[in-house]
Length: 312
View (tube, rainbow, N blue to C red):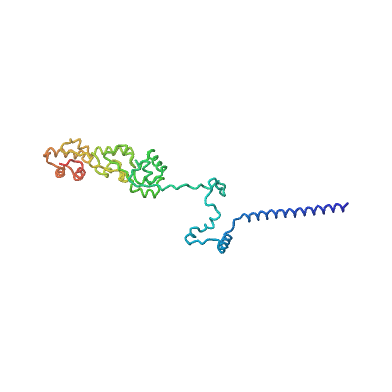
């Protein structure tokens, strides 16, 4: 009984060993078949092609080619061989290694946009003009949106601060930025408030002093406005100008004492002296220099009034 069991076990062991060996040979045979298929389907190497070409040339089967035609018909570089020169019309785009598709070839390249340089005021320039100056439509619209929200360009530096204006663009356009200065003798309160550093209170003070003075002869006269100092005037010098022809002239020979006294450069005492001198002199002959010589006015007053009295 024991001998039969032992014999059965030996048979099973031999059968298992035979099956394992057969499975190993089957796997090896399959891998060998795959390898042979790859070798057969692989295109011939450059060395093989050159050897074949050399053999045909030696046998006289290849026609002679001149140097010029040889250069024109030279084989493509190694990296470009075995690749189709153009993709068939109905071919599907290749997938990249990351699963996406290759970007389609551009049918044409956009020609470079023509850029112009011309004088412009950033407070009034249009979208079309900004595009001509070199900005994109989106950048130009950002500048228009800034203006629509109440923003103003008071100096060239304000245009440079726009985030859509690059340093290179500003460097090219800086000589063409033309922001007109505000004329003080014709400006109203709304225009004065838009000046940097000038609020409603200072705008009112400037208008009151301009009315009493008869107009500004120079920008420096703003320092005579109550509360104005050099620090506040500094940024205004690049924003304002004066038209001296708009200054209202005084007729010292005819104006009443009250009107003369209201002028900032005359005052009550000087007005009384002028009226007194008019009573004792020929009003058709005396001049501003005569008032100074007779001590009706002092030299400081005389110097200030030169731009405010009528020529006699």
